[in-house]
Image 1: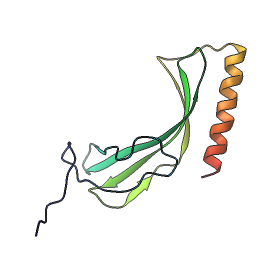
Image 2: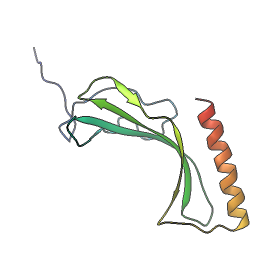
Image 3: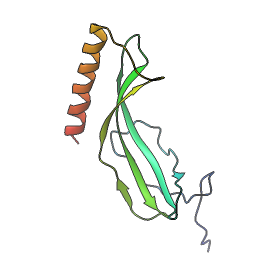
Image 4: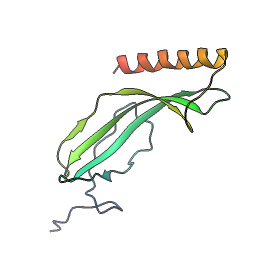
Length: 113
C-alpha cells in the first residue's frame, strides 16, 4: 500500500479540486506556496472579459483560492479587475465607451455567480 501523497513540481500536495465553472485558466493549473508562518497554498481563477482596442488594457473577473496545508479551500470575493500595462492609460472616447461596456459585462458576470 502506498501512503505517499502525490506532489506537483513545487513539492506541494496535488489537490484535485475543480475550478469554478467560469474559470478559463487551463484545467489543472498549479497551486503556489504562500509565505509566512502558515503554509498556505494559493491559486487564481479568472476569465478574461475583453481587451480595449489599441490600448494595453483588459478587463477580467477573478478570485483567489487558498488552502492551508491541503485543507479545505476558501475563496476571496469574486472581483472585476482592470489591468493597464505598464501603468496609467489614456483613452480616447471610443476606447472609454469600450471599457464601460466591458465593465458592464463583467458586472453582469459577477452578479450571475
